[in-house]
Image 1 (cartoon, rainbow, N blue to C red):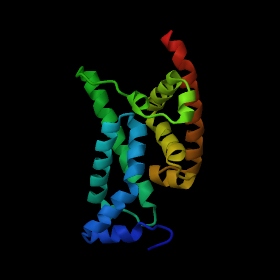
Image 2: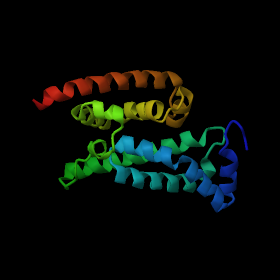
Image 3: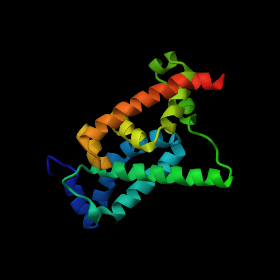
Length: 190
């Protein structure tokens, strides 16, 4: 396997209809893609569906994959696009007046919190989840890939098709906006 991109050989095999190579790619990346979709949507069930859709789309477009790029970044970009598609459909449904449950922050309440999270205020966690879900996608995507997925600035830039400087700028703006939104959340409720 290529040491710079260990998935390149698996992609070549998958292109040759090797089901085991496809399975190996899914197993290597499904948790990261699910985590990314869950944070982006705030909904575990929707994240599961998006994860499946992202892999289906990726395998359908595998011939367009550039082995010089990390597979993880490529599939992450596909998953983020699927998240945006879902958000657009949800916005259209709301606009048309069709009922749609507002579950953006329920995943925080449903997760079994760690000992550190027990010490944190439940209200603050919910406010942070809501604020993250409400960030513009251009800021949210960078924040998720860099902070939650731990991608480097270069990997994030490649996944999103932007410059490294744009990643740096958007990450700064996302953190600043998120902080402002969280601080402003309790005041808007009173």
